[in-house]
Structures are given as C-alpha cells and as structure tokens.
Image (cartoon, rainbow, N blue to C red):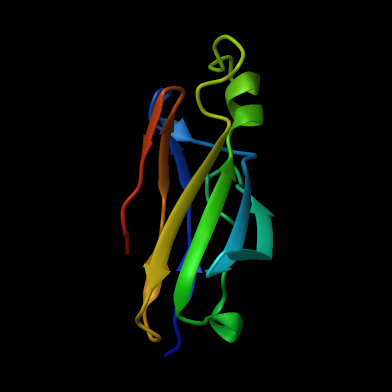
Length: 118
C-alpha cells in the first residue's frame, strides 16, 4: 500500500459541510513552496479524490491552504473588513510512506482547528 492525503472542511458554526472552498497543496522545502495540487470542496465538504493520490505521494513537509473568505462571505459569516479568517494555512509533515493521512479543517468565522484524522 502507498500513502495518500485527503482533507475535508466542516463549518462548525453552522453545523454542516463547507461546500465550494478552494484548497491548494504545497510541497515545502527550506524556504520554497511548490504548488502541487488545487481542488474545491464538494457538497459533502470533501474533495472528489485525494488531494495527493498514491501515485504521486512522497513523505515530507506540506502545506494546505484553505481559501475560506469567499465561503464565509457567501454564507453571511464574514463580519467586518478586514476578515478575521480569509486564508487558513496548515503546515504538517508526513513521515510514513504507507499511511493514509487525513487533515481536515473545522472552520468557524473566528477560529479553526485541525487534527490527523483517519
């Protein structure tokens, strides 16, 4: 089995999946960021396929950037400008070549959390 990476976004303020959030994945090394994938969440708050599939999986340091601003504005949760949360970056490491990594975002207009899921 080869590793892969998935993600999803839940709107914890409204208690529902967050549809339509653009997500970019970057490979991080030293001071450089290389964008390797981009996708958008579906009606279930998930991506239609792994954001880093088994065919291209490598261990290392990565960063997911969740572009939450448009979603928060569209759902009436943005608040006054400038927004408190617009883009949410999560930097993490993947060291196990044969593992499924799942990095979700639990989002509200004024806070977020993440964890290594399954």
